[in-house]
Length: 77
Image (cartoon, rainbow, N blue to C red; front, side, top):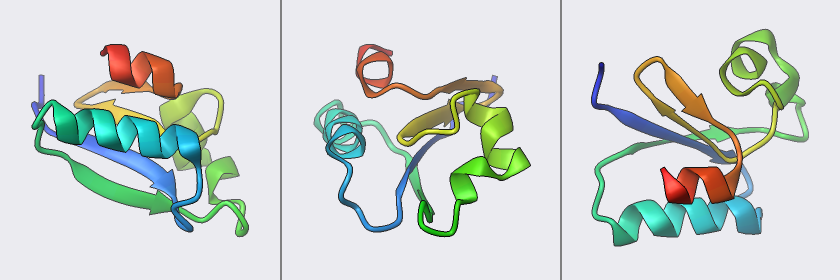
């Protein structure tokens, strides 16, 4: 499995759910890439993103071929 983590958050950085996932990754000192999703432009409904998350919501965490899309699940993972 690819060990790289990528956290997808909203492009305006206003989601409290995305913030909690971001803080959890920082607190755990895990290296991760940060990618933004423009909700106003409906990027979360694009095929590529919806394929990653099933729900089309942010935040989403991708770890190799595995993805999670709920902040509580991301924090637990």
